[in-house]
Image (tube, rainbow, N blue to C red):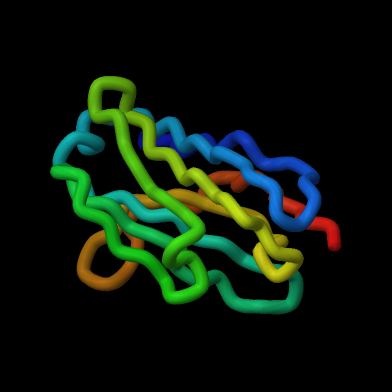
Length: 117
């Protein structure tokens, strides 16, 4: 059974930075496109960034220039470096395997990011 465990969230002031991690179990990781998603209170979950197995990244417009997604295939871990955080970045952040325009696995618990103004 695949497990996705997100960590690294917390409370940060606007303009600050956080680095999120997502550890994945299973042998799929090195070949998978992985993505970070977020869900703010009262809103639908949205894609933040994705990264291919070779490290090519794609970002939502809201994340461009501020966030950086990366991965360590040896550690089965994907990261999200978030800089210049804004209050509107407040959300629960999740990772998942991306395929066919959707996600593959059940969502993990996520990690809460709260940005104060």
